[in-house]
Image (spheres, rainbow, N blue to C red):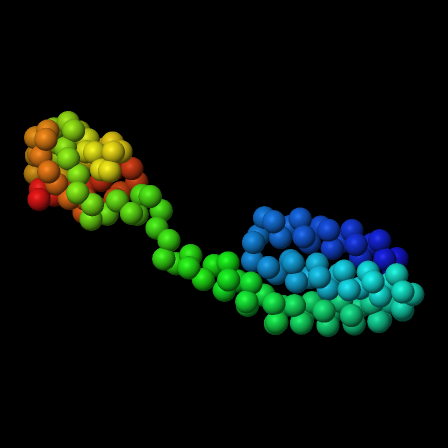
Length: 141
């Protein structure tokens, strides 16, 4: 097979990797680059396929685990801004009426739609208990 066919497929894998971000396609792309080098050097098709398989396997087993650990090792500890609001103190901006589902609270400078088990007047200090979509459930401090 011509080396440029291997290169075109490798580029496709690397472009696909930008969307998947799991290093699977990057491992295959690296193996495809190895096969392209083998084709360029004039080795036969079976040698090209063997080099593709070997280089892909080596990068899959040897590089992928370290790359995933390095890039995503702390990802489990990261909270979104919405998740970070849980347990934070808040101040009621507009009266919270659970029956009419009206009311807003301010948490760290951001205004949120809010509800509570009991009505809370404006100015009441409260704590965020739960997040449901874009609505916070709060309780009086």
